[in-house]
Image (cartoon, one colour):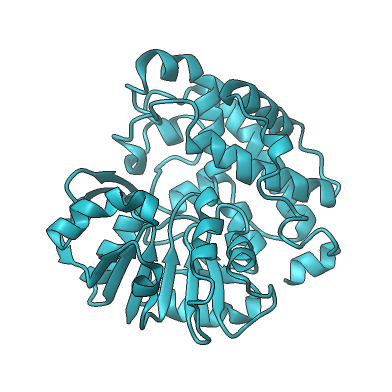
Length: 358
């Protein structure tokens, strides 16, 4: 297949590498402002993978021209943090064709809907498959010289759904070309709520804020950053997430349970389960507090999830507190920014039953 990967961070490089190594023709795209991320890949002609996956694979195209990137393409992967989804969607306006498949990987929070809005597609349009995954299939970090280090690669525990869900079988048919054990999610609310990043990243970041500032992130985020107190905060946030899912009639796993299922962890608990997790070993903390662990996982995901909770009359006092404290720590009023909400996603007028059926 002809594949385009939008996004040249660690996740984008990992997706592009594996699909190209599996014999697909892959184009890698970054916006012109981020063309410097493409320069080493363009110079080298492809991507070098290190870690769990190893080797070099060439790419068909490396470009910051969206028309060139999408020419003749059948499948588009949108790979990046939540705040990249809308810009990438806007880039694709006028370039998408019926029969194409777009995968927002990972969803972060109803990423498929965010993409559709930005790309000018009707939410119920089925001519172009737009779907999302519950998480990125890799733990990966971009390195220098067109390389990506892959710490972990999912074999199980990757969920996917399309919006609307009538297109989910078509989405799965594409994803299973490489991610053969991709599981069918009941809806995009299952993929969104199963994403554990808002449970993990803000709690660890906030309770290690002084260490991040003092050392510039010179410590292991999971191995050294998670203790019993951090685990208690994570669990309380997770309990609220599970309550939201129950209210919507969506079945999701607790974060340690999905972590074990995905092969990241060997112990299903909120403390040593993470600090000793094989899949998280060697991942350093971020260098500053204004990082996607707050700007994305709080500013987008927790803000959206708490808005969904209010729509369902589910109390979220801990999530609300995390949003408030993260806003103080990061110097950004995430609640006031309302980066992604039920209203902005066109969902505020839907009943609980209509949301569950989407």
